[in-house]
Image (cartoon, rainbow, N blue to C red; front, side, top):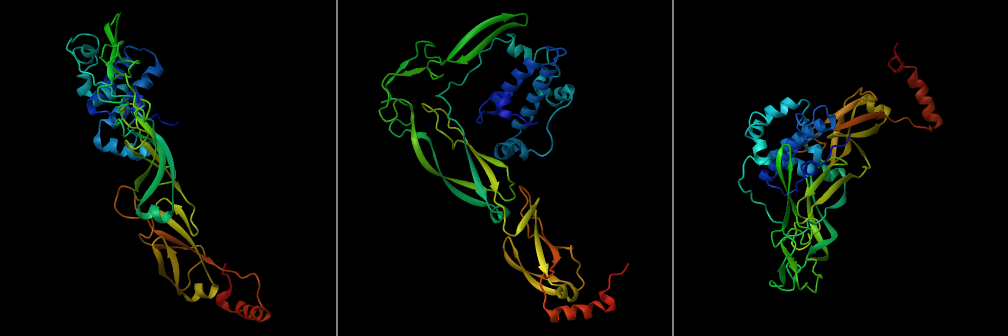
Length: 369
């Protein structure tokens, strides 16, 4: 089953701070807590899912790997199978218990302190997805690619604001400049205050009175740009990495989206990939297999000599150490495995047939039982 995006689960942006991530998780934990949803399997699954997302995004190292490589970059399964494990794992959030003076005080009105809310500066830009084809040689050592893309860029005339001048704004009449709409409701659990961005001004608190003539008040224009993609060694077909803030510019100085780079491995002329190893099929003659020889074979880093010992059997694998692909996010590299195949000619001359018949009579040429 495909896992959901962790940012989507918590309902936060990809640039969210640790404090924002923690607040979002606490809110979901309160909503889906088993005590408030007795017997509800879906609520329990949501509770575990939110805990898994928080466990990754609250950890700087895990979050960095997740941002670059998605779920495939997280080693091990951070999922929780028992809700009690969640309480013990995040005791700093739950305060030892879900009730009492911890999370319920913060969300059900037990504490009346004012909480600041960061005002939006515009609508966020959308993400872009591109496919990047890579050869095995590029994957083996890592590479840097330059790619041209078309996207929305920040308008240079208004610097992304969408207004003709810095004074071409007026206060939003719906939210009175607050940038948010508050609705108060009551329930058996206490008083809820629902805070949402104002739709009229997109959470900015301001309305453009004189739009920029270059972008018509959008704050962004169609653009073509060249981006540089640093591909680490050892990526696999289907892996992806995220370039933060390189996607479409947001409207009216909203945060830019991301670029999702999906890696595609180009089939190789000589090699078949097996994890970080590469396999090469080598064909030698029967005399070479019997007597031994030295051959030159292709590698991912040029050609190299390989010694074939006398008596080498067909189907044997010879190992060329660390001639494969560098490990992703760790030291060392895989090997090149050379599979020995005995070449059997389809057409032979009369003289060759006579020689083969004579050879067949020799004791060492007979297959032993």
